[in-house]
Amino acid sequence: METDTLKIQLDVFEGPLDLLLHLIKKDNLDIYEVNISAITTQYLEYLDLMKQLNLDVAGEFLVMASTLMQIKARQLLPSQVPTTEEQGPDPAKELIAKLVEYEKFKQASNFLQQNFDKFKDNFYKQAPVFNQEDKVVNVQLFDLLAAVKRAFARLEERQNADLLKIEEFPIDKKIEKVLAMVTSRPWVLIDDIFMGETKKRGVITCFMAVLELLKINKIYARQDKQNGEIRIYLNQEHKNDDYHKLLEEAEEK
Image (cartoon, rainbow, N blue to C red; front, side, top):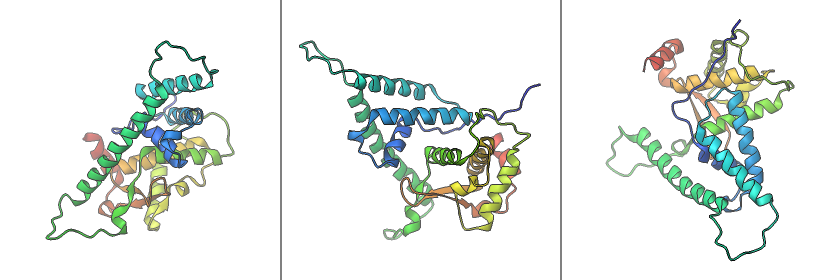
């Protein structure tokens, strides 16, 4: 008898450089002084987490994993006696250069996109004055994955749970749980949504419920600062909309 499983596919999925930047920034590390060995271990842990969540891992993530392991192995090898022969490019320096350049463009792109979405229909006679609410940071996928990782760490269950059995953990029930929480409060911490779950499959289903609600704009996630706590808000524009109908419309698109 076949077991029903749910496979997640995201329309917009951050690349491996996004994941590396997340790992660097969450520990307040300097890009130029990154411990490749430690970052490689954390990177591989996230790849394993994505596989547990049944996320499609693009080939570029695996290529980056190979590059990191190559750099790590090179750094662990004994120092070579200097020779006059021409040495090849240093993969660690090349990776750091890519990260620095990528971070610059990512910050500029995020700033322009956020302001375009927020103010595209607004017109001012004078320069606008922005309040603290306008300065919130949009949450990235890897910030959400970090919350799942913390939830896994809190579980007493330690057995492998690669497959999600929908009969045991229906996603509709978790969607209703999330909506009940955000409806009764001004906002909810992402970690609170996973509280009360005793199995990995329950955490995974809650995570998928959050992704579905984010996708249809029933809720939205914000941070006060980069790598800060994630707050989940009910989208007042869709407060009274039936999420089943919103999901159907999203699938048709």
